[in-house]
Image 1 (tube, one colour):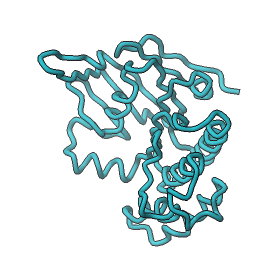
Image 2 (image 1 turned 90 degrees about the horizontal axis):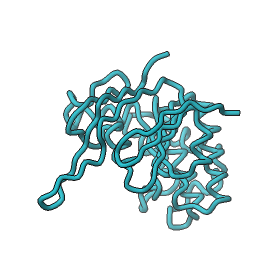
Image 3 (image 1 turned 45 degrees about the horizontal axis):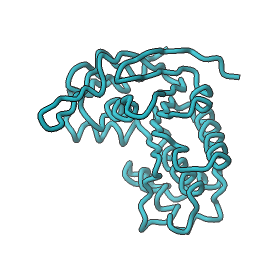
Length: 229
């Protein structure tokens, strides 16, 4: 199968005062197209930093990241932004909806940035899929946390991305709401055939994926293939 993400000997260090702090050290793994892949580990293990490097939101100090056939290290900021716009979807812990836009407008934005002429129709169809067809004209402040994350799900899948990065997608939700959001995420993902990469501290969520990468202290301590029922 095609490797959609390949990470080799990745290293990231931050300088704090007079000290250097190595957040990631010698990280190597690959993900095949269509896989579901969880990155787990305790707080401070480097999970979110790794996601940012894989998505081209930040640059590593050493090593390479190849995303959708492109070596991120060889691309400038504009080129990486274009790649994300065309190929990548994101879901964040804190939703990151635009507060001055309605649910429909939030979902439409990535489509409009791609020049789609049917952005509103596609956005409304996705909102209906996540159970918010009747809330399309509501602003984020008028929606619960779970509803905001469902809008974020619709937005993430609106452009039919090749790969979707989700950073603690249930981190701000109660258990029951989180379970509903995760079911929607996996249902939409299965329908779209998207590659899914989830950063989480929730081992139950991690086990829903085909592969689990475990980090501790900035290093890989396990890379496991799971049996998903």
